[in-house]
Each structure stands twice: as C-alpha cells, then as structure tokens.
Image 1: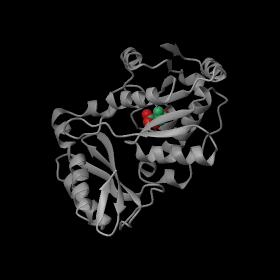
Image 2: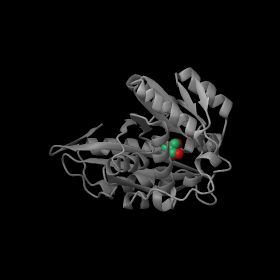
Image 3: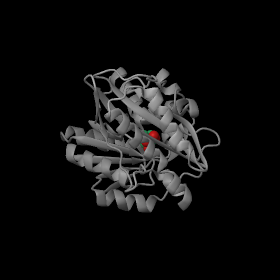
Image 4: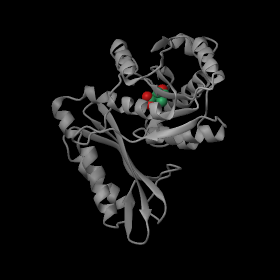
Length: 292
Ligand code: PAF
C-alpha cells in the first residue's frame, strides 16, 4: 500500500491508472477506522481492481463548537488496518494542500442539505459535498462506496453526482452494527459504559418500526412518535429528531403509500455524544411492508 499526501501526486497516479485501463474504487473516510469502514473496502475490493482509501478530517464540514479538534486521528493504526484490508493507495492529504489560502469555491447541495443533519449542523453538507467532489476529482474513481448509516449524506452525494454529471458510480453499503444493534461509529468511543448501554435505545426504536410496519401499519408519524418515546425513556438521552422521510427527497412522510421507499431517520444525544441511525423500508401492496 502506497501512502500519498499530495493531491497533485494522487491525481497523477489516478490518471496513470486510468490510462492503464484500471477500474478505480474509492472509500472516503475521516479515519478512526472501524469495521464499518472495512466493510466498505471489502465492497470496493469486489467491484474494482484498484482501491483508494482517503483519510481526511475535513474542517469544512465541522461547525463552530463541534468536535473537529477532538476528532480521533490514530493514523498509524488506520494505515495498518487499511493495509490489511487490501487498500492499494491511502490518500491522506494535509489540510493546507486541500484548502490553500486562495481556496474559494464550494458546492451548494440545495434544500435537501438544510433539514435534519443539515439544520442541526448548518453548513455541514456544503462541506461534505465540497470535499467529496474534490476527492472524486483527485482520485478519478469509477466508483465510490459510502455507508448507508449516513443516509442523508448518501442521498445528497447521489443527487450531486447526478446533477453535476460526475460519472462516478455511487454504491451504498449496509449499516454495520455491534451485536446489540448499535450502529458502528467512530463516535461510539466517547460513550461511557452506561451510556453505551442506553445507546441501544436507537436500535430498539428501529426494531419497533420494523415490527409495526411489518404488521401492515402505515401511520408513519404515529410509529415515529412511539420510537421517540423509546429513545426518550433512557436516562441522559436528548433526541434531535426521529421521523420517517421519503427515501429519495428526505421530505418528511406521515403515511406510507404502496410501492414507495421510506426511511426512519434519527439523531439522539446520549450524554454528550450525538448518535445517528436509520432504517429503510419499501411499502408493499395493500396490507404489508417489506424491509430492504
Ligand atoms: O462520512 C464521512 O466520513 C465524511 O463525511 C466524508 C464522506 C469522508 C467526507 O469528509
């Protein structure tokens, strides 16, 4: 595995790989790698001949008072994990090379970026879309694998790729979960052992929605309200949002209609740690729902 820190060098390597007719897959991360990231690499490995992983804690997507400084940066450990997962190139640029003094242009991802994670974190998705577009251009990837855990991010990246004719195929990887259902996240390490236990309430709310929609209920707002009661019942929890949305537009959804895909999305603070999770389902026929 080759470690590259200069965007121009990475771009030249990628151009050369394309000239050699190599299929390039990219997995973009902010480091602090866990099983979730490695599952993205496994998908990229299956689909592409060359796998590039990027590690960059992107200052543009952190708001004031967020955990940019505190964000874990265990680079040596990450590099070892990337190597053993079969990454060919690890691109880990310096912030000054990604955002030099003269940097001005950013991507406006539109209205989908303003709700949920976007309203809780103003400017977050503008930062994400901007760095993702830069990383597409630097790595010249044919395909990119993103985790479904950040479902709104995935929807925005898909929208950007389509709207701006980016030409990189976007693949979604299912959410990796701990044995008790908690979605794997770099932020889980901030949880105390008691908070870690309370954090399973998010998955219990998902299970509840799965059971209720499976029984044929379509009153999504009411099911979401019940989910909210589940996550609110644990000590130290403070939900930011928990509701169903249309899976393409992220518009809030009250009632499920047959043939349409929805997503239960949530962000809940457990102690000082903000966790997100989601669950997608497709409403089927007259009386049932199917998990996907
Ligand atoms: O999901 C993440 O880790 C980041 O938002 C991404 C896509 C690497 C952009 O910085």
